[in-house]
Image (cartoon, rainbow, N blue to C red; front, side):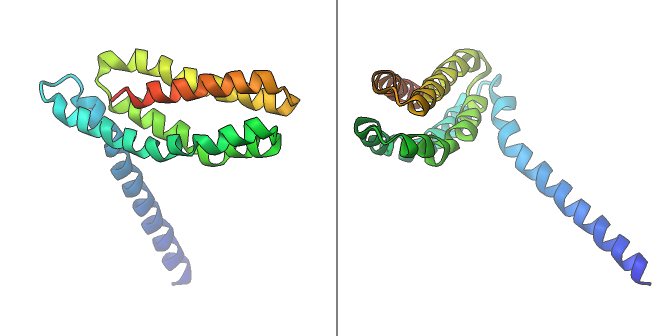
Amino acid sequence: MSLKFKQFCKSLLAVVFATALILTSFTTLVPTALAGTADTGIVVAQAAKYTEGLQPLRSRMSELEGYVAEGDWNNVRAFIRGPLGELGPLSRRLNDSLPAAAQKSARRVINGLTDHLNKLDAAAAKGNTSTATKEFEGALSAFDAVLGLS
C-alpha cells in the first residue's frame, strides 16, 4: 500500500509540474504567435508590459554610476550580477513579445546592452576606470534604446 501511495504522489507531482510548465509557456508563446496577425495592439501592449518591468532597473543605473565613479569594483560587479541580472530574462521576454519583423533588430539592441555590461564587468575586474566609465555610458545608452523598443 505504501509503495502505491508513493507512486501516486510522484505521478501527481509530475502532472502538477507539467501543467505549470505548459501554463507558463503560453505567456511567452502567445505574443509571438499573434505577431503576424492584424491585431498588433495586443503585441504592443505585451511589449509595453515588459518595458515597464525594465524601468525600475533603469532607475537604479545611477547606483551603478556611483560605484564606477568611486572605483568600487566589487560593488560594480555585484550590481551587474545582482539587480541587473534580471535584465536577461526580462529583455528576452520583451524581444519575444515584439512583432516578428522587429525581433532581429531588437535582439541586436539587447545584445548591445549585454555586451556593454560584460565589458564593464571585465573593466571592473581589472580596475580600469576609463574603460569602465566608457562602457557604463554605452550601457546607459543601450538601456535607453532597449526601453524604446516597445
